[in-house]
Image 1 (cartoon, rainbow, N blue to C red):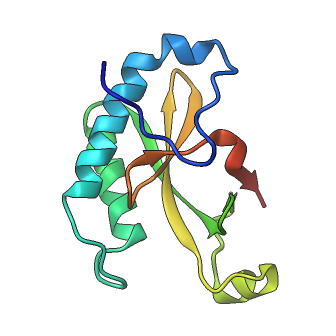
Image 2 (image 1 turned 180 degrees about the horizontal axis):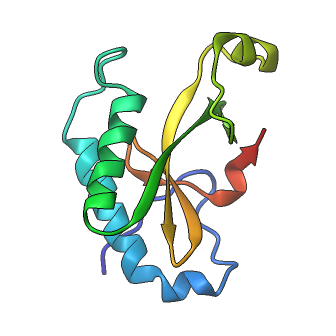
Length: 130
């Protein structure tokens, strides 16, 4: 069975529905890792925005409901800006230098988040709405 790569203190199987979603999670993981391996990260050329945009296209093309989301990242958490506001003024007010883009994909109406630059599925406990 393929290994699911996750970040932030391992994936926590609290929600029993995750077991029902395992095939889809593995498929999404494989697509995300392939996308992450397909390009070199080049700031302001092919960075988090382009990785996210292209991963969303890949996932939507095969029937997943995926979207780019925006926010801020520190060493521990992803701060999700539901409004999409990652302006420098907002970043500065929250103590960040810049914003970040990553991907939200729904599997059976449950959101999963992917760090699109690495292809890693994030632990949902590390996603903090702001």
